[in-house]
Amino acid sequence: MIGCYRGLIVEGSAEEVGKATMVTVVWSTLTIVVLDTVLTTAFYG
Image 1 (cartoon, helix red, strand yellow):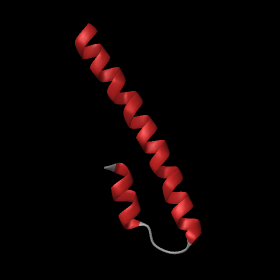
Image 2 (tube, helix red, strand yellow):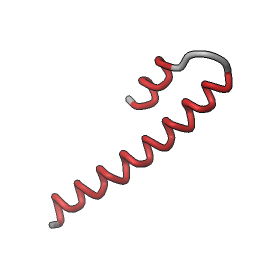
Image 3 (cartoon, helix red, strand yellow):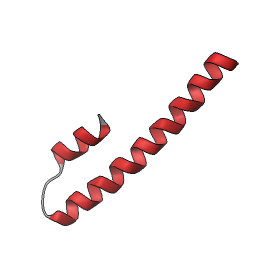
Image 4 (cartoon, helix red, strand yellow):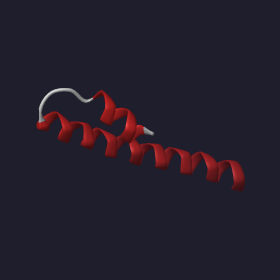
């Protein structure tokens, strides 16, 4: 969902697409780490 959102709002040149891709990778990685931490804590206390 993060990738779809970032892909749809990108405007400008090909350089902007590269920047949007980088932001998407960072946000996706952070989201996975945070959700993994929350779910692990919830299930294993």
